[in-house]
Length: 398
Image 1 (cartoon, one colour):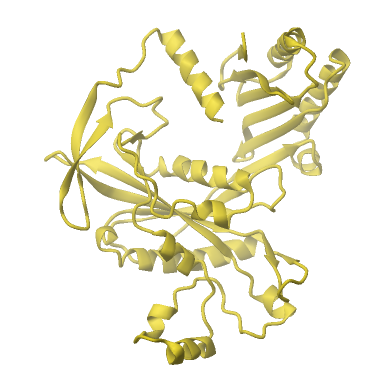
Image 2: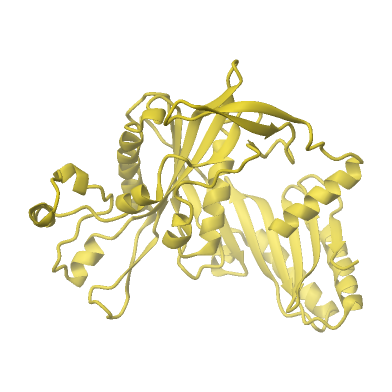
């Protein structure tokens, strides 16, 4: 995706004939919430497009950097949760008015504590008795997942899965009249498992328990209320608007990511979530039974596309498509075409043929990206924005 972004940016600059002047920057002061010390921060005047937030020049990694990678097994889920949370944040925090920064308030230690299981009363008592310093039950009771007794059986594990796998934080800043920049909103994404993997016997076999979408929503909404109450206890966040979205992960080996299910926005200083807004998004794999059953026309279009390529190109291996649907309508289609590389001439030939098929057969109401790849890496990229009649082609090495 980095390569795609670079290509898109390069093409944009080539077409417009002028590049953003990154030397033209504005200096603002960032409010340090801990010691009330003001720090200078540089903000670029330009961004790649209106869909991107302007960052501060000195990029601050999130305080819980790395936790997402450790807690979420599927890389596709990791990418979609980050990109999707920012996408939904734009409805609340307009990129024209806000700067973006990775989360600076929920720390790594804090998240690992919250992602643990609650303790049973017996576990709390044992910890209090054996503590070398004076502790309270509240200090120990930080886990958000269901409690589990020490001698839990397989059935206990199935009845009390770890629903919550991660909490992702994004910060949104605004410039004040005096030139300071401070956080004026945050977004929180709660990652919820669709499949719970557990090991009731140490070093024993792994078992799996499916978690329904309905159960994910129910548990996620309860967890969101608790997370909100805890966030409000952080001094800098007592009165900022908070957007919370619930994300349902896919299985570990899935070839498509999961999706956001619902979101809510809580006004500054509010302590209670009042209502949720459903999100109708889904990723669908082509070919698949789900695609045939729920998106027959799109499935047949891609099957015909695959057949035409097979007729034309002898070293073709297959086609894998990923459709992103919003409100049951295809918004973006990504197609990967692996080939056996036999020379640049073949790459040019298949790229030209795929280009012609796209122009002839694919509707223009959705975004399209086609990646032609070999064992050497990506050979060519064909992409088209919604509404464009003709796609753009880039052949690597040309």
